[in-house]
Image 1: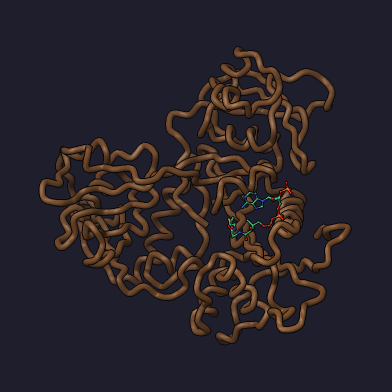
Image 2: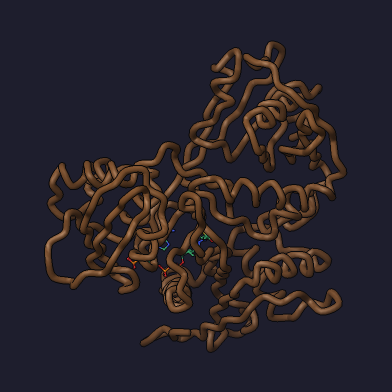
Length: 435
Ligand SMILES: CC(=O)SCCNC(=O)CCNC(=O)[C@H](O)C(C)(C)COP(=O)(O)OP(=O)(O)OC[C@H]1O[C@@H](n2cnc3c(N)ncnc32)[C@H](O)[C@@H]1OP(=O)(O)O
């Protein structure tokens, strides 16, 4: 691991999460997990929940980073408490009919009394170099704030919406759905979620893996964000006409004090649009509720178009979903599925020295071939690695980024159009994971 250099009165340590033996939590793991909770302004995790949380991190084989003060002041938190936390684990990103390995970053916190001293910079630089050396072509995260990660080469790659659907009297869908819905024991949600997600992940462009803690979150057993169990969680599955489960929803009632009295979706996965709409029909008809909130709705949600009254569908928030950071541009260019042929030379600038260079892309019959070229020479487009990472899944076009001043070099309109023609996709990228 690269050690940060000059003027750094801290020690950066790294280890792999391991399952607590016989439920006994290692003191270092305990201090690290509590530091994460403090960093996100959450309540500290109760002792009986700690083994479960650390077990989920171990299931992901998370690489844990902790920054420790080399000297602590009298009466301050002990040396064992990290002043900064960070974790990463290997996942995959669907780039169209195949996946590429990705370094998935999570649990980034710096103690408020130690912010803006370069601690995040030290951790992320060490992890990105490590990921690149291990041959991972991409890094990925979901961000608490949009201002943090651009400087480290990350670009927004997909977006999501939060929606509220008015399910008061009169809620109806335009067309009939088939199959049936049934309530399940919440404990069965963990494995069901994994099965459905794996199928969807393999076929959804832009999908990134989920961390293991989704298993307990969707079953009301707590997650990293909210470690304590939530006994209000309910789980309902959709069965197709042959009796096979092809969708599920994990949700909870927000209480009679919510206005309007609402249900909230924790997770909804459906293998086809019939299952998706049937689950929504169920949610829309649940008694003692008049609205359903869906925090992670896709941008192209068919539900809007299925409602007899589309104004019942209200977007309450739109935001960035997945952030990507290229670590190996030629590998990424060769891996992606394309829908138009063409040839391009692009120059990628990377201040961290990880992925920069001049690269040729040749696409024929939807398959890309790429090679690194010498640094000197012309390029059709020159752009920062964060802009390249945003463009990679075509969640935004090169023309739009150029208009936004994000493609820095003087770019010919023809080159922008050619890039967009090669990279465009029939559907926008969709990510169903937050980590
Ligand atoms: C993937 C995830 O886990 S997302 C969760 C991120 N964590 C949180 O939001 C928890 C609360 N916030 C924090 O713990 C910290 O403020 C962090 C982790 C965001 C930043 O950690 P720091 O150690 O302060 O960052 P560091 O000192 O390395 O800053 C590097 C640069 O980023 C800038 N920066 C850091 N945080 C922010 C921010 N929130 N908004 C804008 N700029 C920021 C710094 O000003 C600095 O800029 P410079 O290079 O021009 O001087």
